[in-house]
Image (cartoon, rainbow, N blue to C red; front, side, top):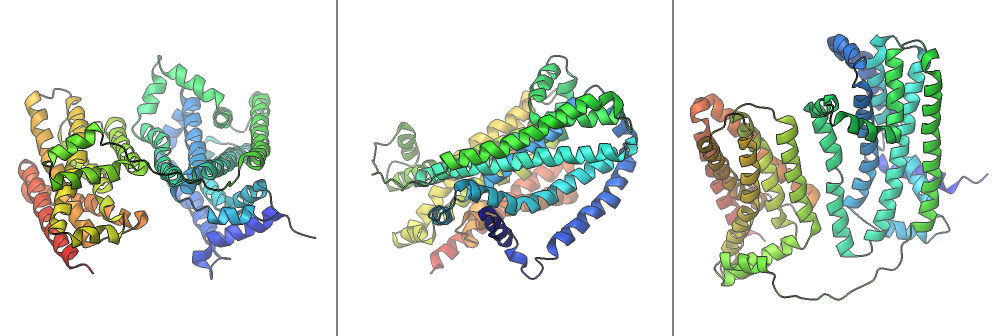
Length: 517
């Protein structure tokens, strides 16, 4: 009997996913399963033992339903968002064109891919379900209630994963037809993760719980959550927590909501396959000619800031090359929103020192996203400046100015706003601390530029190493200055060390670029 086409694709997808452990491919699921069992049997009960009383009090509180719905929605959104973000990060249409040129339906392709990655999703689901089951075990739930909770997670997260794979493929088939579309896809792959991060930070920082307890916003949030399929399971879990070992009082509501989740999963599979067959296609890519327009006002201003001569032209060209890519703009939006979310949702300090220390871990990441773009155009772009008289120094100078113009306004705006929210903060203190952070952020640009020139990486994946070096160095600088100099003189150490290492690395990177072959 001939195997279904989706099964062949699923098997191949699994082999691709496990290609990095060919020799241990058969043992891999059992190893992961062993880790999950260890977490369920040892780690989770140990954690539950520390918070058992608080957990029982929470499950019996009036916000337990909404909080459980929010947590389930966060997992649902993550499983939906992950395949979309992964697919859009690197669009390669050649494999899809090869598949679609064969006698096979797009729905078979997508369903096969879904079944191929489902074992990996299942491992993650098992970890989540196992941890939740261990957390709820002290409440005294019976075996049937635990089985229903496991079914809730499987139905909810599997639906999200399938919807995410279908949406990713539909969007990828549309955006993959042009370079501009691929650039927009990479940009969207970052931005789509922000709602998930916002929900996670609001839970970690306690802001969501505070909002649910607020009579003004709490009811609105609960009404919105009630509409979502992921919330139906949350209500079942809380009902079980309030009636452990007794299904009678909540039997009708449980059957209704569980049936709704099951029907949602079936409809998601059916309409997902239907949408793939009708909308998923790979028409021939169309080519359009480029039109060169006059410089916009912002580019004329940038050129004027560069003196208007040859350096001004180089500076404006760098801004044009940087700004015409949606991916670069999305990186700025992404890191700025992340910084804002951390400052607003997690930070709760009553003085200036907390935001000051935290800013030296997150602002370096922002500077890294901006400045590390110097190598992503390839080695050939660097050699163009190598061949011009004084081209290396002109390139470095332009990249420094470009980095400062993008890093400083955002950093100053965010940190000054955070300082202004500190209770009792005086204007002089706000200006003093803001000036100190601005001075440190100014040093981040030559710091990360020197790192990228000394260790050039020409792909986005490899360049992330350079982006993460500066925050790690920031940790060393902050802790080392606090230990060696104390609280009073630590800021001077932060400024001096960042500027000293930044200028040294920039000089070494400049010399390496001049000698590059």
